Amino acid sequence: MFDLNAEREQLLKTQGNLLVLGGPGSGKTTIALLKAGQDIGDGLLRPSQCVLFLSFARATVARVAQHAGSLLRGTQQAQLEINTYHGFAWTLLKSHGYLLRAGSPLRLLPPPEAAARLSGLKKDARGAEKIRLLLEEGLLHFDLFAKLSTDLLSRSRSLAHIVSKAYPLIVLDEFQDTNSEEWGMIRALGSGSRLIALADADQRIYEFRGADPKRIGEFIQTYEPTQFDFGLENNRSNGTDIVLFGNDLLAGRNKNKVYGDVAIKPYGFYQGRNSLFSLKVALIAGIQRQLKSGDASWSIAVLVPTKKLMIMASDYLSSTVDGLPAIRHDVALDTEGPALAADLIAGLLEGNSATAKDLSSKIISDLCAHIRGRKGNDGLNQAEAKLAAALISFVSTGKVTGAKRKNLVNESARIATERLSMRFCGDPGEDWLAIRRLLAGSSATEFVQVAEDAKFLRLLHKGAALRSRLGDMWRLTRTYLGASAAVRDALLQEHFSTSTKDWRGIHVMTIHKSKGKEFGEVFLFEGQYQGRFIWSGATESDISQARLTLRVGVTRAMKRATILTPRQDPCPFL
DNA sequence: CTACAACTAGTTTTT
DNA sequence: CTAGTTGTAG
Image (cartoon, rainbow, N blue to C red; front, side, top):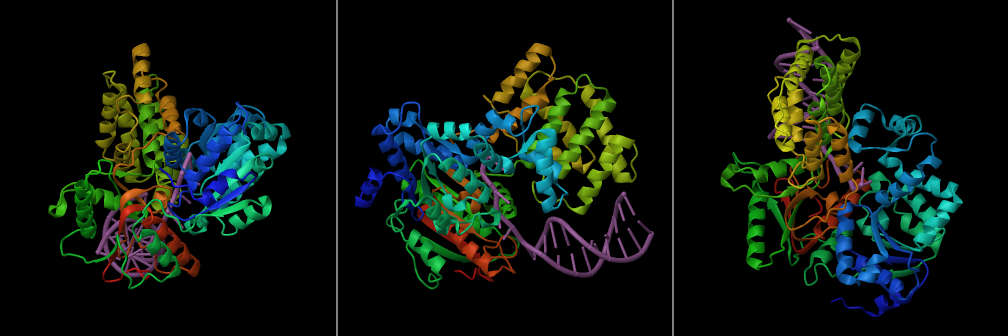
């Protein structure tokens, strides 16, 4: 199944700290899992001890777990714990948070709620507010996980001892993309455990959030690891020029060359047709190729540089305009808007005992949170910020000026009244929909937006925990009292659950999100004005980051990569 | 506060 | 090209 050459054999025999370097698809994960299996099999771990494998994304964790399942025996798997950096940090903080802050146990501040609370603050004020929320309200922002875990481990020697006893060997996936806080946490863990870092300096695409080109050097200096480099090996797209193209792209020697299974397509614009027409046509050809190949588990990724273009692409693929069929696909949308919409709807479902006036105030507060947080970390525009401020002042003073705002306040009162005279049927899915329709029918665009965002929620499908919890609630009390808490739990669950996601079929996402994944075919698309691989005014360092990013995107492909760039103004890399 | 016109920028974020 | 921001008038 896997050819173990002399270097890999050597790695399996080597003890102490290791640094494993290698390009895309060179098999770093595989050899790390085999190494874990080897050490476990050799009896280097006691029965109570585990190898800890840490990665960034839940999707990667799921994929690594699946891979481990086919690579290792059951007894070895039992002593392998695979988790995200965040998931692991939270287990520490959950049980030992009392060491950081006296009083009530720490509560997580979910990203949507955090976005609503921090929006409008300047960058440095945000950091201070996160700490204030922790100390004064016991609310833990996700960004503080790594730093607080480090504090915990360095402050409590006994805890550090317990952790390194439990995990004598720790594998660090995607090490090149760790930021300084995560690096701090790793050093705290590494004081008592052996470390294996897996890294590819040329897949470092998160410099903007603190990944540092010096990091790998720091690891070498701190741990003096035995180094292995599988840089030139390629198990993902063997027999194609995909990795060769990626490496040439970095060196800037890809221009005017022809590569097997890498197609550069300059696309034109057609009168009266969507600017994504050429992408959809190319994608349809790709689907036909995949269907013809007879591979039942085929997968295709459409990768774009920006979230905005991702949404545009998803909308266009789903539509039937320009005489092209709708193409079913998955898209990884941001969750802030839908989550905050869910809070508002849950509040309405719950609102049985409240008076119409109380409920109306609650709706307005929830609406404010939705307005302020739905764009995530992107700041508010002026109109939104002013509206949110005016609504908050209305809740406390009862005064509001302006026709639009008066209408919004009237609408919330109307919605509250109508909700209280509503009769639920007891089917959570139906009742949820009834509330959503009530909001969608509002004359205020802000409520309609809530209903729109809520369409993207996947909380109440058949078999969902929330559905049965709301169902039980109704059976016991004939009300949905407690719905808010139930929805909050369900949303929070999503941030840590490593559901084994199926990567078959078509997936639309940003290039950044594709890191650590692989697909049969990949389509990379850039727009002409928006969503460029390199944007106007990019600095020297932006350009080198863009090269790394594009390389990561291309090398996700196992069989074939297609890059679409506007003919009128093609990407300077190509 | 709101509506309209002129202007301008156009990135990436795991949990 | 086009969505969002800024400025101006009512």
